[in-house]
Image (cartoon, rainbow, N blue to C red; front, side, top):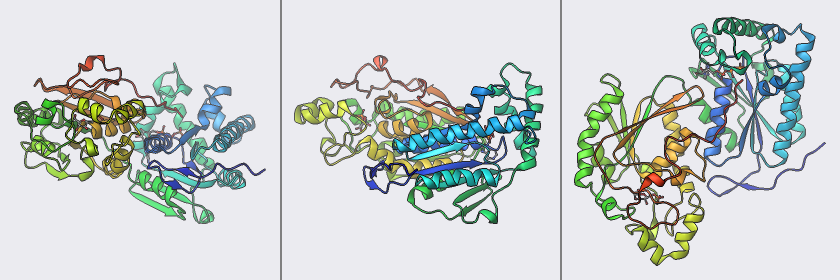
Length: 458
Ligand code: ATP
Ligand code: F6P
């Protein structure tokens, strides 16, 4: 049966795009990072306002078989086979329903380890006018697989309450059972669209990528790595404009801002350590460059226009009270929908996210980075890592003179805050307020509160 297709839609930048719908089919043995890749793709796409959803077949299987042993995954176990097939059917059926409701990128997170299973999924998608993109993670590094098992699998809901050593052994046996039937993607499937990631990106093979949306997903996935690293974020030191409650501009640092700039090398040294090479990114505006100027010369420094503060157009240089006075309707509209409101002649938060995409891509490729930037830009970058939604992220309270350390882990990002102890005005503004320096303790959305994204455990 042919399904009704959603009409033309807009992308994150509000531009009309072809109504491509893609089923991303994860492929690979257990503990190869498929769920992690699926979750990251979902987070990235949602951050760009592209409707994406992971369908984790393990979660469907768990509703009938919550704690299976390795034998359940033995292909000679007819009952196990039947139940695993039923779980895959249920996930695909739900995904098709979600596509019918207008979903754009569905991610089928399962091993999908045989050609026969992959053909079956593709046929279901073809019938419904949905493109299929296979993403295989192939990895034969025994040490990495073992550490994956210990890191995430022994804490999987499948093994709740079990001895971790027994859980690890059972999981290895589960992998052995999958290995008996696993078929990597090869020339038999050369008519398929796929991305094959070998040994965590040491080698990648791309085949028959068809359109813009597919290439965007593929490019993102190609850039992921799992080397341990952190990202440090800081706003610039307090500026002369901050003192007067003015927004935008290209002001110099205040006296306290300069003090923060002098202290920053020590804060960074304590948090990063002496030996780790660090790259520093600033915007092209004076206040971030001045903040970074005392950092050691051996740190590579780079200025990005994309890190400049949200452009407030005709309101540049005004205080919030002046904006309310001169443009009362705009002021109310911004409070109403801060993410989407675009300043006259300037930008919205949505615009900033779009221009930050290359920054996120580069961040995914990089190791340790310190970014010195501005309030709105920092909110957008933080929202990406911490899964903050569009409603809350523009209202986050990001204090001045504070170093934030974000460390991506398998399922989530760990955050640490170091206050410099140098006082500064508050530039946070609550909804409806025009106060120059409001008390942010009333902020309902502060950095450090839980993200809104759920995590599926395979
Ligand atoms: P399962 O089939 O049991 O669901 P899975 O393939 O989904 O397993 P994950 O739960 O995603 O495995 O495993 C997460 C671990 O894999 C993390 O520790 C992560 O660092 C690691 N990892 C991420 N990407 C890769 C990769 N490309 N190759 C190998 N390991 C990876
Ligand atoms: O006040 C400092 C500042 O960086 C301004 O330059 C900028 O317009 C503003 O913050 C962004 O914050 P909000 O979106 O809350 O107005």
